[in-house]
Length: 336
Image 1 (cartoon, helix red, strand yellow):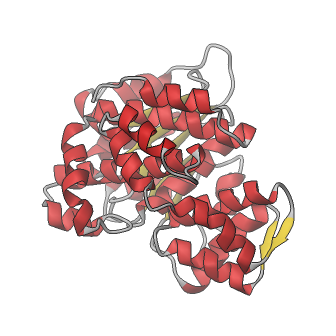
Image 2 (cartoon, one colour; image 1 turned 45 degrees about the vertical axis):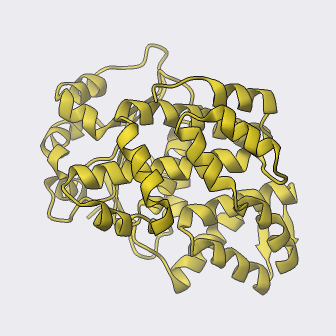
């Protein structure tokens, strides 16, 4: 049985996966949690996220268009050696047969990471992972109460941070907007503290104020809509609009667009899909959100994902984001 044990913290597993585990299936209704744990696993397996020889990301629509793609990728080996990460994203039950057929390729030099938020336990893919001794299944469902506290405390411990009761309450408030928001809040606190620290509620609230600027969502929408110059002009006219926060807000929006496209492709209507997103889509944002869902192809989304990942990686490595690099990335035309 390779379902992650209930008493095992998923963060602990994802940060240091056991050497005998050569693949992981992340599934469940909490898309943000799937994304967070996938990111932690990817970082553990392949610290250099920009190495094209060691990391390969493949989306579900690519597997549908080219059934031979995955066997070819899994059978190949990197020229310079090293452990490879094959990261499958936006996977559903329709991809199960093709993936199950290549599971034996996962081994000491190739880790297979599958993000399949909507997958059911009845899927052949789930059953194959559940019974394999070298593969792991991690369930990702909405957290609350003690489970949420455990997750938040795990992130804080990794950053060597402690919060007083008021500070924890403020951090839990961010989780009401989605687990990804809480994750980014912890990263923000780590940058604010600059090392091991104990923070009060007042310090936490002062720091996190920057991460929830009212105009941040508007700039993210403008950027993805191809209105980068307009977004930069609006950002220059407003205070407290840090580049790293805008990058992460845009990443969150991109993730929700991907999820919405998958739901629509499965036959869900717009209203149902809007309610299934985490956090749910506000009515006032529906028109501009679905305009982007329609405008951006999967190829466009992949390119955006690469641009934003490069910027986010720069922040995590250097703890800052050069303004010139940021503006050049914003103004680089993509296929939108």
